[in-house]
Length: 401
Ligand SMILES: Nc1ncnc2c1ncn2[C@@H]1O[C@H](COP(=O)(O)OP(=O)(O)O)[C@@H](O)[C@H]1O
Ligand SMILES: [Mg+2]
Image (cartoon, rainbow, N blue to C red):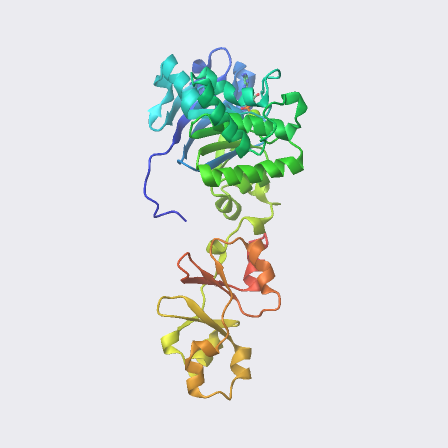
């Protein structure tokens, strides 16, 4: 979809990273590199493979989700980004800089100024107020009290907790505590946000709220977010790109739609089998080639001719390629007495329903009710790029193809 996007430096680049836990990881590395599996390594050497040969790029301003079951290596992976964990092999670059080359001071600055982290357990300081919790990392980073307070209050408002700044964590629900954690992460000016199962411990309703709030915030802030989850629906909702981990290995990276439509292997296919495709799959990837007629070329004969080869409708386009009319066989018959001239004007013909190509299938299904004509699928300039009939939509929604 973004084939023509300009090349830019990734915000975070992870290159061939291995992490082996145990007494002497380096001694085991050659075996792991040669392909020995996790159980073999554990039985023969007592070492645990955390992650194996992971490479991925995270672009500035995107939400990149890493998804996998418990124990698949998600936390191990994300902790490499701010060097809470050092790799057994491989490189981690942030803005092109290798984090392993940073000295202590540079590393501290990285964690205070560039990257903030939100954990599953909210990790709030229990005997500090909400305000004080949110200010805390700023104060530690040497920001003056006034500035820290202003920045903290701004983020407390952003996450919808204005009025609670003097309360203590024990007075707050789990969802509110997690918002404090989020406000604290947002208050540092850092443009990278690491979120390790940040919503996983929340009740479903509150979790849905937080997901929606994160989406709204992100639409404004454009931070680079690395978001860990074991929940596929959450991954599909939040992720611009999704990486699927299994047993420390990367199975697939792509948009949610890529992964649903073209799973890389059986593991991924089984993983995504039961997901509601209608909420993810867009018209861009599923629309069919329409039969069209140029408005300047319009006549009853031309329409009739075109309709012999299609079952539903001919879409008439203007000089710019925008859909202006859609004609069905039924329409042709109902107006068979009209004069030649009448047929030449698209204004006399039914206006087609249009839908932007970025629309997901679930949203267009209601448009078919009471309509025989296919939807005209248009790009952001309103130019016709495809058609979608009810039958096409149903076929695209079925998991069998
Ligand atoms: N400090 C550690 N020592 C030994 N094994 C570890 C350590 N941390 C993680 N592991 C192992 O690495 C694998 C990946 O763990 P983790 O990254 O925590 O997975 P996830 O976050 O996906 O649940 C698991 O097999 C886990 O037991
Ligand atoms: Mg984890």
